[in-house]
Amino acid sequence: MKIPFTDLPAQNAECRADIDAAIKDYIDRASFITGPDVEQFEHIIADYLQADDCAATGSGTTALQVALLACGVGKGDEVISTSHTFVSTPEAIINPFKKFLTSEIGKKTQEELFLWNKNQAYLALGNLLTVCALEKIDACPMEGFVPKKYDEILNLTAQNLKSILVLPVGFRAEDCHMKDLAKVRKEIQETVIEIY
Image 1: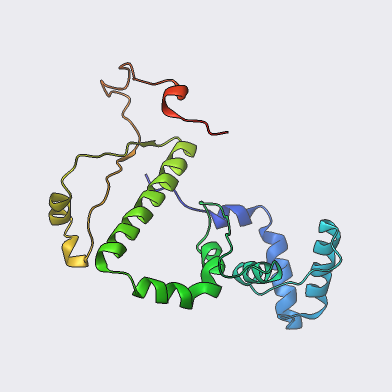
Image 2 (image 1 turned 90 degrees about the vertical axis):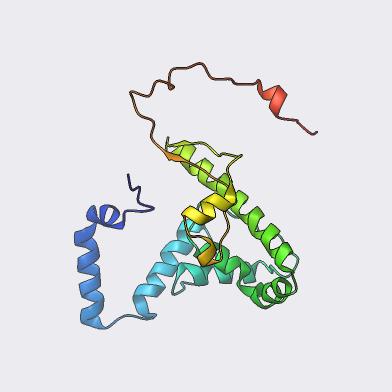
């Protein structure tokens, strides 16, 4: 089953007539950049946010970059973001540091790069498990597989890739004989250490 990341047509359907009318009006007046419509939008948003001013930007990515600059975010600062977001969010965060990151990554050995990428795979695994839980999709990370066999079967070596982890994802069959078996669940106190 394919689960879409977003469904813009469904979101637009409700107000499609208003959107079409507004776009036609902008085209008829050739009002594409700045002008009274943008000024009105800025005033409405400023009033809504109870802010002194508002500056519209050409894209959400630019808005994120401007916000980071306005906050004085620089080298060495930590930026905490959501894990489930569009690519523009991390892109805007790392944009000021691209040269630094490229330089630092270029200094790493192949072994260091492999370990760094392996850790990235585990971070992605955590995000995917969270999404699966939210969407009520079964997921089970697995250890004990033979990476070289996976690389061979999936032809990963030819793409300069290596198997790091395995995560089967899907919906359990209603006739599965294992679905009603008792599960082993440890108490939270046995698996989580609280630090005060």
